[in-house]
Image (cartoon, rainbow, N blue to C red; front, side, top):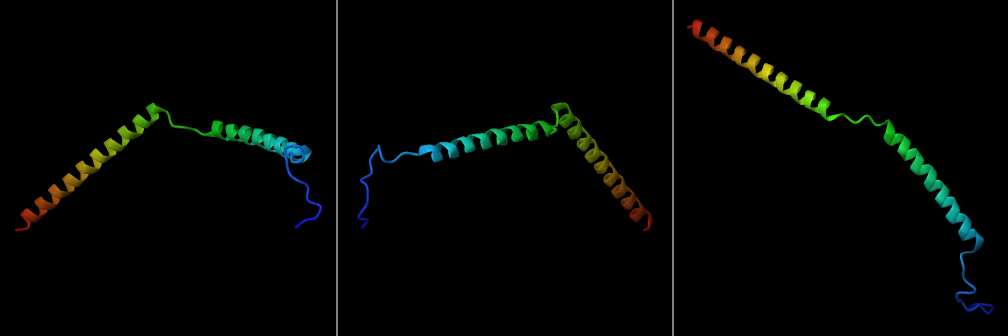
Length: 85
């Protein structure tokens, strides 16, 4: 194979300065990514529990009104049909 091959052991194989530099660069990138993520998370406007309950109540009221209106329309249609005979 290679005539000048050096036997590999713990003394000849090490990450060296390049490995250390890459590791530090990854740490720095991680710090900036975490800071950016925290800023974005703080910007999120999560609804409060009271707001959610208010929305549920409003939806229930709207459903009741829609049901009442459809019931009135059916009653009027039946009344009109009955008077046409």
